[in-house]
Length: 294
Image 1 (spheres, rainbow, N blue to C red):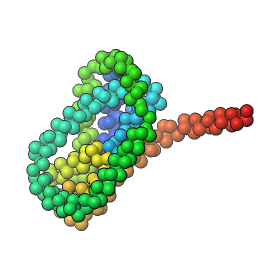
Image 2 (tube, one colour):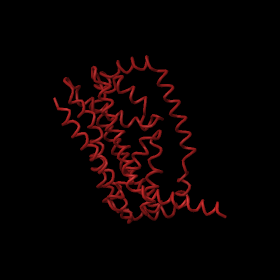
Image 3 (tube, rainbow, N blue to C red):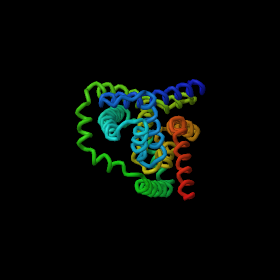
Image 4 (cartoon, rainbow, N blue to C red):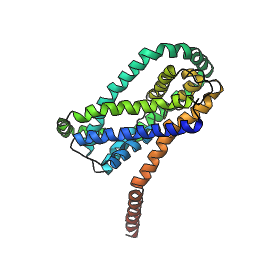
């Protein structure tokens, strides 16, 4: 049995590993596109993007926030967009392969343990699930309409995007594979580490599969970070039988997988853009006063 302090220290380290691997991956890809940035700028881009993803349905705010951060750092929009595209070309197959491996080994056992509890939870709470899904869809539509359409700018730069893509050597993509695996493993490991603090922890293999499913199902659920539906799944048996510790572990798990990401993103954004934002606001006020004085 692991102590609470040890678990918190390890989970904090896992969050750091996840954030650092994301930043390094994007920095290396931009370097391959001959648009080098410092690790600090790459960390700001990815962390702000992750925070925006966590607070928007289907993680829809991730790429606009990252493109805005890239533009602030002096990275051309087209280069940033191509970098994000290459990153997706790496992360998608790696994540799919990891999902297939976990499913092949642990999914049958996980389903055997979780399906009775999930069926009971669905039967008792289906009206709540429906309301959450409808609210999430409405929020997704609202954000889609309110968000600036950066894709229009990218469509106008197709030739430049191809020019950036042709510069890409193989090494950033190959080096991104182990970074992606390391970051994925760090995120998935948070829940099993927390479960090791229980007097009778569940089997780690099926729990790791449940952790993976809860993390990546958030992309499909139209609420910020899958709020509501993912939480019901957690306490309803998706992570196995945790006895009376479901809600306690859910709260701590959410702190490390959602609240910490948002909090770090906000702090990084304030540190990177706070002075610039205040200066821009001051200039806007001076301009407005000048216009009123006329």
